[in-house]
Image (cartoon, rainbow, N blue to C red; front, side):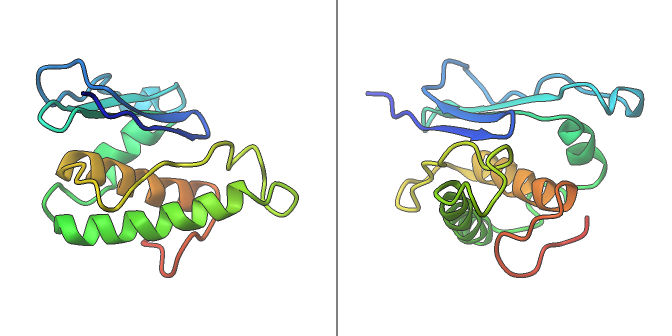
Amino acid sequence: MKKCISILFILATIIACSTASQNIADNHKTPSNKTENDTIRIANDSLEYEVIIIDNGFNYWLSSTALPRNYHSLAFLENKNYQYVTEWNNRVLQPNRYNPNLYEMRIDYQPQIHYGYEVNYLIYNYMIYFQNTYKQKLAGYVPLR
């Protein structure tokens, strides 16, 4: 039975129910394409989850600025993602206080589910990108990468 989650980060979506047969990253952008919509897709077949993030400049930022894979441990990524998602969801529930165009939809991230390294890596880096790009602070210190 496939597990499904869905998330909307501005124009970013995390969707479950993987149909790919391997981890995939699509749409390699060059600096000249920085302002076009970026699409990154990573599928984790063994866990039946996939992440799709669509946001201007994110793919370029991920390849040029983000720390490399395996820099942080899986436990670190899961912990930070839980903190960021908790605050994100609090802001979704307060549209009069926080910009509803930034926090459009609740994120269904459950810490007891093991999404795997790639999914957590992508969510974490999107949260860093989001906070730096939109001048938001979700939880504690935000790296300026």
